[in-house]
Image 1 (cartoon, one colour):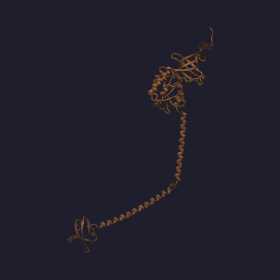
Image 2: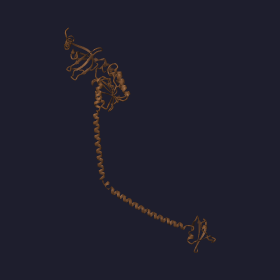
Image 3: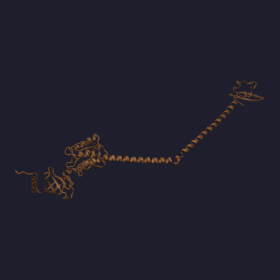
Image 4: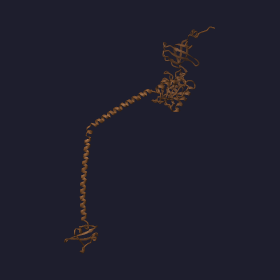
Length: 396
């Protein structure tokens, strides 16, 4: 039995495939369509039970954009890719033949959910400006969680990540993703959720095209960022989410619109602006105080104050003099009224030498003089005056 090297065996197989099979036409569904940076395009051509790798070199033009789920007729040659030891179809021509089953299912469910209002723009919520509590739903073993954590740590180390792992591919994935979203909502700590996975074929991303995941995203109490696949991948979760990110890394950047360094720069600039504004305000107030201090009104204020003080002194002297005059006048009036009252005293005639007689000519005693209602005669030096004594007041 001859011994072969790996290369010899690989090239022998390649020669057999090219000579025995050669040019073929194959009908299948495009899956995992991936343009490379070189311009070459790679995808899988599959049916219900098998698939084959295909390559479409960049110099081979197409008159339509290939998409996952698209049914096509491929014309090409069967080749062997020696570095991987696998056969592939070297495509010369692609002809659309209709849409595959997965794509049709995608479109039907999309229309149904859209009609129910789950994709309506008015129900989408804005993201918080600077969340410090971020929830993440993705696979525990993939590169997505590492990319998200690395990006958040670089941009905003102060934030805290609440990670709830879930399968993102396979039959159990839709329920696990929905349950993880519900768990983060129940905890109530996360301010925003990132739900996503890395890229893949249409069937790889199918969990995010299910009604279960779409309804979980719509029912989330917190805003949801969908970050599924690469920039060209579109899922129903993208339509349901409040915001769609092209990649998981882009989602981490969206949720941190400003880095910690940006915030520190903003704080520094704000502090500097406040400092300058305060200095300008103080300078303006100081200039205003100086203008007021040198204004005629303030310069003359001490003189006016002394003049008013002198005027108050004048008023005090005038008031004192007025009071003195009033007191003197009042004293004089009181004295005059006293003299008048003393002159009206019933006993006053006696002091003045009058003789008080009754009508029968008998002299009255002082006690009788004070008896009211008596008519008396007041006699003095041959002058006779008649008077009536009323309540101790002698009326002439």
